[in-house]
Image (cartoon, rainbow, N blue to C red; front, top):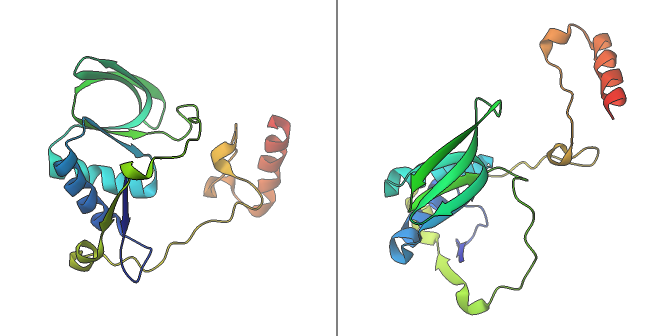
Length: 172
């Protein structure tokens, strides 16, 4: 585990975070880097793959190891198709949220945590993260929804949204 901090700011842009992670990968030589499928993860994983030359597989639902290779089930075409592929290690995998059961929580041994001062890397970066706008999940958390009914401009007018609301109620 690596904990990175930058003086004067808790916000680190994906560009700087990818450089920090690339430095850690070069120093530690891991066989596998797992990155969450998220807005930040999309930026970091692609950047890290370019810096390391390692294969990157995204939208992962299943991972199986066979020696120095992984067999992976990943979504393609927006999740409409599941594809099986094989990649050599070392590799970078971007894992779909909810694809695996949550691991049992454990206290991490403090001796396994490496602290890295990111101040110089953040200062050298071209991107300055000003703020992060986090959506409010007061009413509905879509990441836990079993079904989602959504509409776009094709719905016509605001009155037609009630039809979609009715469908959402029927579907639970």
